[in-house]
Length: 151
Image (cartoon, rainbow, N blue to C red; front, side, top):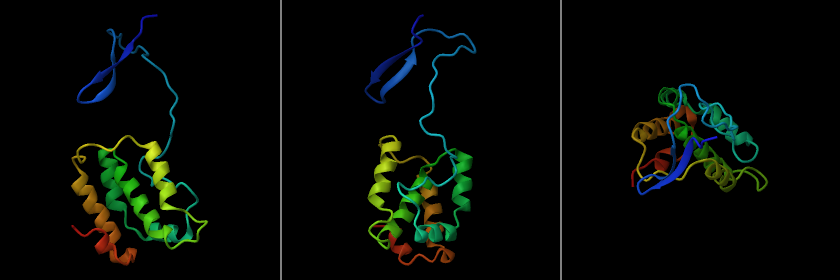
């Protein structure tokens, strides 16, 4: 069997798989099992159980516009940021055996690619949707304006 793909290194993109030969339409080039299967529009779970305080905060957050934007663009990172903020805001108020932001961050870091060198093109829009959700009066998050203050 002739190898279908080969691994190369580039100066601008790092390592990449490229075609080693021409393919026939419909030909299986490789097969792999997914490592993670998840709803791309759901908030990812924290590393530990959700805290009651975190659940109450998530229930109050008006994330509809952010979810719609993520669905339209096929991205998930703004929802991960929302989960990180909820975990960060609630971890300090929890008992020592509750969820920790550090544990969540470690699990999130292990699942994601290295951070991009440049901001994603639509990050300004997603940042604004996050800010609106967390600063919305119905979310009742004290200090949210300071959290998103420019500085």
